[in-house]
Each structure stands twice: as C-alpha cells, then as structure tokens.
Image (tube, rainbow, N blue to C red):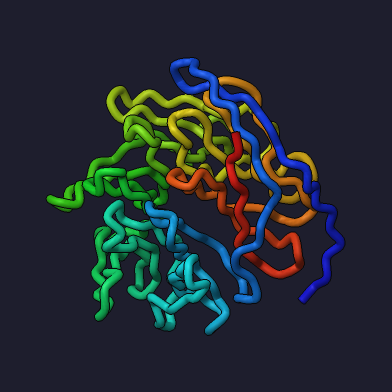
Length: 295
C-alpha cells in the first residue's frame, strides 16, 4: 500500500446557507471520524433511512466488487452479494426492505434489487437490453432514477416501480450521470457536460427545466441528496488536483467541506442523524468517514 503524507484540518467547518425559499440554515461540520477501513478498495456507499446501516462496495474478496452490509451498532458486516461480477452503487429503499444496486452479472450491466431478509433474493429491475447505472430511489419508494447508455448516448431515466414503465428525463446530445432525488422529490440532481466541463445540475421534474447549480471551477460530480432543501454536497478537483467535497447551497457560496491532500469522494447525507458520510484515502487505504452537522 502506497504511503501518504497528509495534512488534516481538524477545525470544524461552519457556514450559513439558505433554502430554496431563502430561509437561513446555519450548520457546523465536525472533524472527520473513520468508520470503516482495512477493507480493500471502497468505491460507493449508501446510508439506510434510519441511519443504522451502511451498504458499500468493496473489492477485497476478488478484486472486482461485492456489496457489504454494515451494522453501525454492532460494528459488524456481511456480504449481500457474492459472485464473480462487479456489484456496486447500492441504495436503500425507504422501508429498508431492499437495496437497489448496479451489477455486471449479466452480459449487459444493469440495476438489480436484493431483499434484506434471508434468503436474499435478487431480481433485475432495469431493461435487460440496455446498460443502466447509478440508481436512486424516491422517498416514497415508488420511483427509481438512473442513467442508461442507449444508441451511444447517456441519458437519465425514471422508472415507475409498480408498473415497471420508463420515462426518459433528458433529451439532448450531452452526457448525464449520477442522479439523485431532491429531498422534496421535485428535482433530480445530477452531473453533466451540458455546459462544457462536467458540473452539477438540477432538473425540475414537472417543467423539465435544467439549471446549473454549482459555480465551482474544475470538474464537479457525484452530487449527494440535498439536506432539507437547503444544500447538497459534491466532489470537485480544482483546488489541489485531488478530489475534495464541497457543500453547495442552493443560494450562496460553496464551502470546502473536506480538506486533505488525499481523495475524498462519494458524499452521502444521513438526513435523520444529520451526518455526511464519504469515502477517503486520507490514511493511505480506502475508508469510510463521517462528519456531523452541528448547530
């Protein structure tokens, strides 16, 4: 394992953001706490709605990727998927009965669903003939959003999980990835090269209006879900050449939320317990860290 020389700023980060309607939201961010380490290359993660479980993808078993379910109370984990394919990008259903995730277990990668009660049952959700990745589930559990590659284009799609019918959300010649539902369900956050370099956008589900919602220079990607309609987190590579996580309010200036010379990426918000989870190499190995929102 390559050694790293790192500088970690342990002072908490403070900011004032405003909601879409202009309501102030004052938050402090605590120093980073390491939750999981020594577990191979970790690339994606999700926090359950209750904040009690973490699902993450790790290549420690076979160099490819499995989904591991980790209980924060018992500090123990177990494999949910265990096959030769790459399994990654987990996300919990609101009732915590299922995890949706990406897998290459078929010839064409797609979105699958696994039950969280034994015996674990897996079914494919996305169309078998198309490549689909990075799922997210709406708060009511009725919709699934993801990107799909079709006819050499990359677009966002939404699926009704009751009828299994799809609706295409974007209609242009740009690349659209990493979609997340907003906390009120009215918008989709995602990153795209629609205005040149990759940046974070919001898509109004009703009007289909697209709006760029970050002003950071450089490459911005991997938006989290927003916190109470006030702000969200995204990854940017401009300031040190590595990946840092920024808090991006819907109104106001972006604030750097993580500061190290390692890569910090894949932010995920635990809204119930007011925490930011993310993946980092700040101690050399890949690990999962968290920061608390403090008033």
